[in-house]
Every structure is written in C-alpha cells, then in structure tokens.
Image (tube, rainbow, N blue to C red; front, side, top):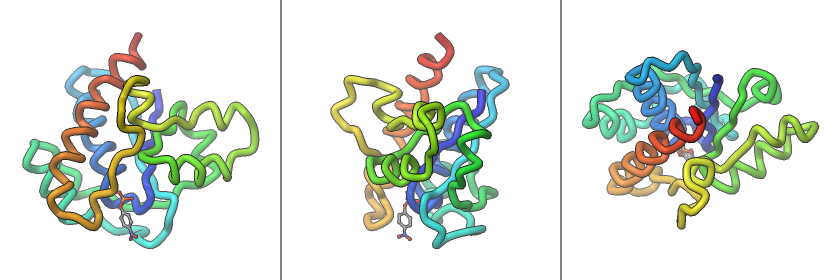
Length: 152
Ligand code: 4NP
C-alpha cells in the first residue's frame, strides 16, 4: 500500500501525518510506503517547520530529515491513496486530476479515518504555535483509525 499525505506547504500538517503514519505502520510491521507533499511550492527542499519537528519529537517521532516537495500529477500514478488535510488541498489536487481513477484516490484525511468526524479539515497550525500539539494529537488519532480501516 502506498499512501501520500498532502497539505499546503508540506512543512506542518502533512510531514507530521507522514511521520506518525510511518511510525505506526512500522510498529505494526506493515510493509506500506508513506510520503507527503504540498500543493504550494514555497518551501521546496526545506525541513519541516521547527514547531512541527519539536511537537513530533515530544511524541517520540523524528521528522527532522523530511524535505518539502510539491504535489505533482505523477503522484496519482505512484500512490494508492492520497489523503488531503483540508478542502482547499482537496480542490487543488482534484484540479490536477485527469480521470475518475485518479479522483477516487483523493480523500479528506479526517473523513477517510472517520466518516462521522465532526471536523472535516485539519486546522493549519502555521499561524499559531499553541495549535501544533492539538493538531498533532488529531492527526495521530486519525492515523490509527485509518490504518484499521485500510487493513480491513
Ligand atoms: P502546512 O502549513 O500546509 O500544514 O504545511 C503551512 C505552511 C506554510 C504556509 C502555509 C501553510 N505558507 O504560507 O508558507
């Protein structure tokens, strides 16, 4: 199984989701490939935001080696599932798709993890330091649910 996590900058939400997901699938000894990308290109090649690195590290996950990259049309062919962090990411990714097979791979991350989730969008913590911890915890909970869904 190949999974891509997508947000806007690929320096806050999707690298945390990538790190958590990889950590959990390794713990469960699943041979899954996890990656992340951003719909915007402002931070290409940069490491995740320091606050994202610190928050993940506080929970035992090292994301300091990740590098931001931009989502590309080729990712539709490379991944089985493309999980987007919010509805803007959703429309940006969908606008690059060419057919239903590609579109069917794209899902809102929180909704895919739990269709009854009251929250549909992962809040962008970029503008507010205090949001990193709750956003991380939400991402972790969603990753745990998503793994169970994808395994069944
Ligand atoms: P992310 O957060 O999409 O979770 O990586 C952002 C990071 C950077 C910017 C916006 C959102 N930015 O405008 O540079």
